[in-house]
Image (cartoon, rainbow, N blue to C red; front, side, top):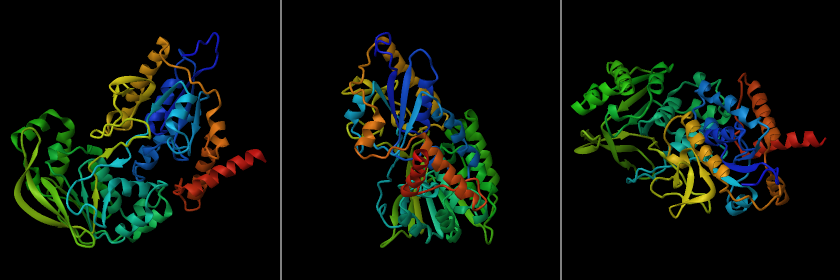
Length: 464
């Protein structure tokens, strides 16, 4: 760490990833006074907020409003947002480390986990990450892939019983009027309005006591204008171990009470059926040229929560299959990531290389611990990492960055177009203005060209 009596410059920290984990880390650094800091909050997208912008379903307006809280950190004088910069492409990891005293990796886990079954790559089989990115307006979303599949989808099967699986099923089952005032891009609203969805089946390989969705997400399914939730009472019969788990866990108990309240529902003409089916393990996706169904095996769950097949099979019709069985992290060039867990090896946030802490390298969020918890979980997680960083700074173990050139100046000199806070504010204003043309609070700009055009307009105005 620099001796501030001889070198008054602050501790320079780069945080790679401007989602909740990165913003919470920047906030923890900027909000303390023991060590003067200057934080560059770097993201490969031109926009901040990560999964709050591109992961939380757009019909969850209150949850998405969390970005207003996160924005306070972007306004902090010790924090600089640097968007549209990809580490490994625009700037090498070794180069970045030469510019700063410490790096905190918080870029999340954007990859999807696979099922590993026959037919998984048939047309009409998508990862939840594909669908979520599309309806949230992520610049990297494959519009053609998703819209072709959604346009054929009378019968949808969502594999997984977490909150993301429920989000996907709920969005596909909503009526056009219910989505009208969300901030979805217009092409998404148009595609969903034209989608011929009649049935959404959500499959869980284990029982309802092992499902990971929250009660709030579950209950939302019963408040859709043109849908009815269907549950087979036989799926809700619990073994003694599951009964014991329900008695000890209020979330499980509330979920079961909600599900039992729906057991008497019957299909209703003209309404989308949302069928929650448990003890159903997918064994293959059926189809020749594209998906036509999902073959499932009935399971039983033992006291340890392990699902075992019974040898009883059937096929659930499907024009669209969405695999929602988890996220996983991928490595940045030059950064170790465990192939099994999809996380950066670490101890309390200190990055491990060859089993030993790597000086000046830290991690937080999903790439640190895996895709678990809610958005707020990242705050405690980031504070743990920042505490480790500040302890190392106080102990004098951080090596000062040798390159004193400003990071943004270096990027501009090599032709990169970093998006700074003023540019992001211009994007924000452009989205608000676009939304106002259709009576909405906001409409998301979904493609990188439009986002950068708005950013350039801000820069041109300053120069004028």
